[in-house]
Amino acid sequence: MRITEDCIGCGVCVPYCTIGAITLEGGVAVSDQDKCVECAVCTRCVVCPVDAMIQLEVAELPYPRNLRRYFSDPIAISPVTLAGGRGTEEGKTNDRTGRFKFGEVGFGVEMGRPGISTSFADAQTVAQAVSKVGAVFEAKNPIFPLLSDPATGTFKPEILGERVLSLIIEFTVSIEKTPDVIAALRSVEDNIDTVFSLCAITRVNPDKTIPVVPWLERAGVAIRPNAKINVGLGRPLIP
Amino acid sequence: MTHSLHRQGSIESLQDDYVFIARTIAGFNREGCGPKLQAIRNILCDVGISNTGRMDTGENMTNGLTEAKLRADDSAAPIIAAAVPSRANMREIIRRVQAADFGISITVSGLIDEVVAMCRELGVKPHTVNLSLGVHGKTDLLPQEDCLALTTMCGHALIATNLARQLREEVAAGRTHPQDAARLIAQPCICGIFNLVRAEKLLQGGDRQQT
Image (cartoon, rainbow over all chains, first blue to last red; front, side):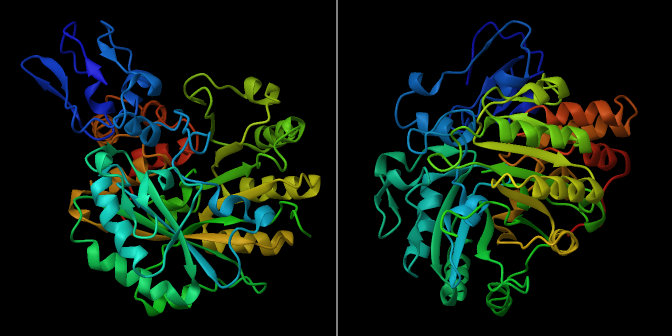
């Protein structure tokens, strides 16, 4: 988002910026173009009294800057998933698709969340670490076509400097590799200049216990008390 | 992906914070699902929700989406997402959806123990769980937890820390009513899973016991 010279410096847009890229300088609002992730929250939620904010659409932004918009504004349609949002249906439709099976764990490493943003360079650091312990990256995730080498978690070089509000590194491993994934993530968390929110997806046992819990506990991971649970009301494709 | 599992705050405040998601799949059950989704939207309205949204228009219950619009909507959308302000309401919604047997995948976000107990009560078998394992990396960049309890109610992280902080300060100073502040903070959350009822309580009373 760019701010034109019509700005009168009222500051109404400043608090809406998701990553604090808009500041008042010399009596006018300024948008730091390196930080701005093109999320469009400011132009969608703020009524600028002089109409000084310009948000370019996905098709108007040049590559690779347009990646900022795909990943930061859920209304922007990804050319990969043909949908808004940053991830996939993950466990939400697993009762119909059977994507995650017993004995497997799906991990979601949401880089930049909550509210910090991330570069693709930091995402690559994490992706390369988990690739070394056998992570199989999800092909339907919008980041997948941006990997120049999915086997090693390496992104295309021209996108490494781009910043997005968040992106999700989605991958699956066998449940026995859970401690290896945790160790890989711990090995790089001090090497990145952002945060990540971590999640783990598994089937629920018939007795309603969760098979990955002992593996996570053994790895010393604190499991938060709230979760997202597919309650199994979808009709399976293969009964 | 509505990242409703990473909501932060005390156990107490999370007890009245549920997210309902109905998800259709292109090529399997999205085509022709409009009437079923409309029936689900009517269940949500009948039982009571605190917010919902539309990804295609960017509207939620604070900036244009109304109950009348919701009930009239028979579109075959990929997703319906709503914030539900109590366990009783969440349980009743699941009971009605289960009875109607739509065959559409339903996900509930909330405290694990409560959701599992709800499933036991209703004879529903949880299929898949997505566990939240916390925030890692350079965590000293994060804002204070009272802001995170508000901002993490938007699954796409569209609510700015500065907006939450500013409105929290305005409520504390008596310049803005908590209900008005909650609606202003909710505005950027286009999925509509920002729980307005919980936000108002957080703005009124704080949330000191963090998880």
